[in-house]
Each structure stands twice: as C-alpha cells, then as structure tokens.
Amino acid sequence: MKRRDFLATGAAGLGSTALSGCVNITKTSESPALPFPGNTGDALIQPIDAPMRPIKSSMDRVTRTIVGLRPYRSPGPRLEAVKVGSKDVVHNYGHGGGGVSLSWGVAELAASMVKEFGQREIAVLGSGAIGLSTALQLQRSGMDVTIYAKDFPPYTTSNVAGAMWHPVTLFDRDQVTPETMAMLHLASKIAMSRFIRYANDPKYGVYWIRQFSLSDRPMNTSEPYIGGDEIYPGMRRNASNGPFGFKFYDAYYTLMVDSDIYMRALVNDFLSNGGNMVEQTFETESDLEALPQSAIVNCMGLGSGEVFGDETVTPIRGQLSFLLPQNDIDYGYAGGFGARGTLYSFPRRTGILLGGSGDRGDWDLSPRQSEVERMVEGHAWLASRLA
Image (cartoon, rainbow, N blue to C red; front, top):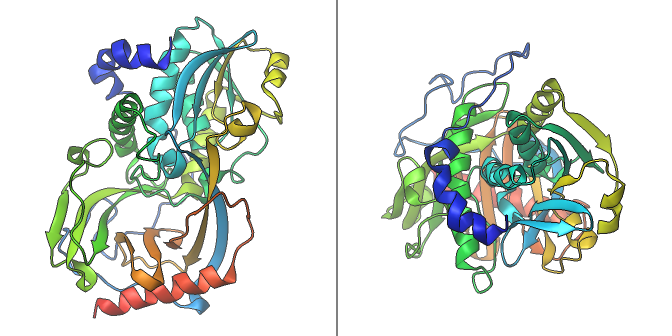
C-alpha cells in the first residue's frame, strides 16, 4: 500500500481505533520521583496564569552539555511503502525536531502499512524513539520484531532531544505537500493520545508542563499547530501581556518527555515483550538483502539519506546544556530574542534543559563553549525579567 493510498483510504478507517491503542505498563522497582513542582504533587499542574519562579541559570550550575543532529527532510517526514530489491520496506524517517513527539503516531501508521505485507517476522532499522515505538506497535499487533541498529540507547539522537511534546522543525513550507501535512496532523493526534497515557508514571519520565511562546510582536495565528490547536489543553493564541514582560504569547499545557528515562523504559518494554536487538551497520540499500526478514521498517533517521540515496535529508545541529534540577519549575518557554538569538528551556527531573541552537547542514558533534555561555547568559536574562 503506497502512502497516498493509505491516506486516501486507510486514515479515515483508523478512526477511534487509532486514537485508543492500548499501552502495556510493565511494573518497575525504580524509586518514585520527587513531587513536582514544589509541593503541588505529581499529578497536579499549575494554572497557566500562576506565578513563575525564576530559573537559576549560571555557569556554576551547568551539569553537562550534549549535541545531537536532528534528521531533517525539507519536504517533511517520509512515511511510505516501497519495494527495495526483494524486500518490502516502509520508510519512516526524516522527522526533524518532531521525532519524539510524533513517534507513536507515525509508528501506528507505519504498522498499518506493514500489515499489508502479510508477514509475521519484521525487521526495524534504527533504535531511536521512532524505531522503538514502531517496534513496540508491531509487537502489539502480534508480530516478531528484531531491531537492527548501529547505536542503541542511550547513544541515539532521541536521547539528546529536547523532547517537549510539540512537533516542530518538520519541513520547508514551500516544499511540503498537502498529503504530508494531512499525515502529520493525523500522526500528531494519535501520538498525543498515546503519550497522555504515560503521563506522571515515573517509569516513563513523561509529565505535564505549561509551555509559552514569547514575542514582542503579534504571534502568527493563520494556521493551527500541527495536530490542531484542540489537542493542546488550555490553548491561548496571540494573547497580550505575556510572562517575562513580553507583549504577546501563545500558551498551552503539553507533555515533557525526559528522554533519558523514557528511552530506557521503551528498551525494557521491547525486550520484555520478546524483542531482539542486533548491532549492525548498513551502508547501501543492497545490504538489506542479507537480513532474514522480508518485511522491513526503515527508521534510521539521518542514516536513511546515505543508505537510500535521499539527498533531501540533512542534519540540524542542536546543542543542549543542563542545569541542576529545580523542583519549583513547572513551565517551559521558547522564543527569538534579537541579538541573544533563539532560546528555549524545559524542566526535567534530571535537570533544567537550556537550548536554542539549530544549525542546518552542520555535522559537528563537539560542544561549543560560546553556545553554552550564550544560553546560560540568555536564560539568566530571561529569569531576571520575572522580577
């Protein structure tokens, strides 16, 4: 089944089934997380207008800096069934800055395509959030799944993702098709409905936060957020008199995915369900012929560009620094701030995440001290505006 056929005939048929897939929770002996935020308890979230406590952003509170490469594809993510040699392949890659956010949605759509192959033994290429979610979805459909990858968590791009739930940096507006946009809206709806079921379970590291987009200029409301504004509880668009003293803001509740915790939990779930993980590198698409499975889902992200000759795939370099944790921070924010550049911050239990870089075509994985200092100083400046 080709992508166009699936969206034309299959997407509507998913209906409530796609939005109500089961999640199997495995018991864990991990210690419960501390109450968050402050003394409000794990399952509570502050009102959008509740006062904010400032982030303590200083160089002496930086615990680590990491760099990841987002697998960006200018026409948008590729979700398509094709024939590669003797193999039936579903491509599921190129999700840019939305890989973790979209993972359960594109996994469910990809699994529906795989069912058309009529095979029980399935190979999944790649072990990031897309690959693991796809593998788990296939397992829940009764299939035997083996993941083949060069790297496994915690050494994947998903482990160094910001991972606030909001599919962004997905396509170039002048290159994306209406078909791909329809797929993204559907995948986002499915993904959010699935992620909600992980919320406030300490095993998975997923919890609610309030999120703000900040600007001194009116916010663009000509198009809805990916998936539709209605999937974001409490949504406000282009509201006036925003936090931090900005004139305009968008605000909503969304989910924070602590990827260090979350990816570890997905691996445990996959292995507990009888899955296999095999270390293997692919250089060209002809290498697929050596796999024992005839049905394959390609979730290799950036690697897909070289292996399958997709010249539209390019990295977007993202650098993140983490501050010591603060259990009184229940909000995130993002914006462009003139000479200070782009800045965003999200609260995790493992630490306060500081970000704001996005360098297209840059393959360098070395942390840059100048970026660490820009982010720490920029977020300190924003914190000072709360006063």
